[in-house]
Length: 155
Image (cartoon, rainbow, N blue to C red):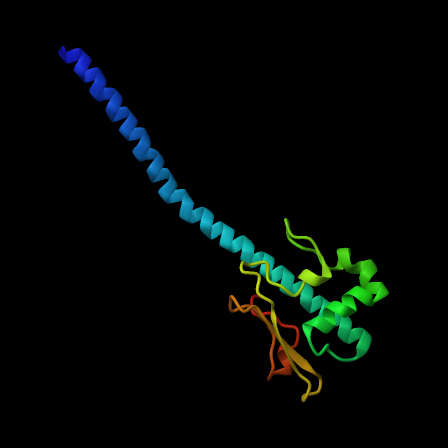
């Protein structure tokens, strides 16, 4: 084997090694960034869903002068009230790719799709509630302070 042929083989091997290592470096930089972006998107979806639940709770309270005792009662209200059936799609906007459906409103879009936690304090006037996501620190309302009625932790 002459020296030119050996240099060409070494050049091809080094070029392939450089390309493979460049791709590995590219993936090591972009993969964590894509994961962070995906987590941000899911967090925004969860917050939007919780805001939709807050809107439904406010509508329930406006029509019944009280908050529902449970999230199941809220879903029944959303399915049976004529006004809420008509306004459902326009009132409860979901971030893509999610769509509004009354049954899914009380579940987090974040895997493993846990149900939102809802507690009602009806010993105070006005009644107050706490709506929270079991997989994060996001919450709406408070069980102690009436000034935090309908206030979200991220706004």
